[in-house]
Length: 259
Ligand SMILES: NC(=O)c1ccc[n+]([C@@H]2O[C@H](COP(=O)([O-])OP(=O)(O)OC[C@H]3O[C@@H](n4cnc5c(N)ncnc54)[C@H](O)[C@@H]3O)[C@@H](O)[C@H]2O)c1
Image (cartoon, rainbow, N blue to C red; front, side, top):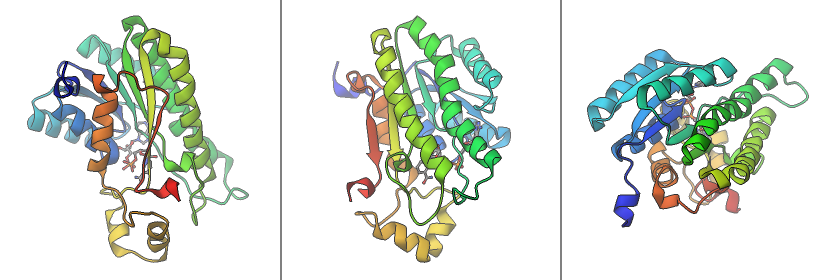
């Protein structure tokens, strides 16, 4: 099989959590462009419906929405069950849903800590466990977790202890599941993005200011990434092109973690 064929995702069924907007939406579009059908599992039904309609229209794939909170075990189970009802299998799980709360460690409310860990780390575990069981039955599957450079370094000057810890946890979870599930044909990898300019943060980056200048001065490429710049790695990891890749951390950060 040539590389062009290996990168194709025709007939695939992919779940994208938090795929309604932002980085998840961009990666969902790339997987759809390569032919994959989609389930968008998101808290925000309205945005998810809009994204699904656009992806169906633009790429001619099937796109189904499940309104869900990935941090709830019963929701993770329902996302998995609805995907199986719709498509009969799950080829790819893209664990992208995530939140951030900024606070100094000594001041952070425990509930805020829990909220971040529940979505960013526990949500990835719950979804991976549900979908992993199915992939083990299939003898095949690819799980892609979105961690962050914040799981590798400590951002500055903003304080985000729970976020950093959650993303470091996602990196360890990725390696652990990769090791446990390699004998079952299930691959697990993580993408660790740096500062990315999404619809939500675009204004912020355009206005600039001391914080943005600080971040960009610490980034060898001197600019934020844009969501499209995660598309190549998402397609690679979803597809047969990455058949020997598991337990790996892919930094997509303009060089931030190199300095
Ligand atoms: N934007 C960045 O600079 C950046 C950098 C590194 C990593 N990341 C990570 O990439 C991922 C996506 O980031 P983004 O900037 O596109 O975020 P975003 O806030 O633009 O979008 C997140 C999406 O996830 C959904 N969501 C939130 N909590 C959920 C839950 N409990 N269950 C289901 N859906 C939920 C939201 O409704 C939204 O649609 C996150 O994991 C984030 O931590 C982002």
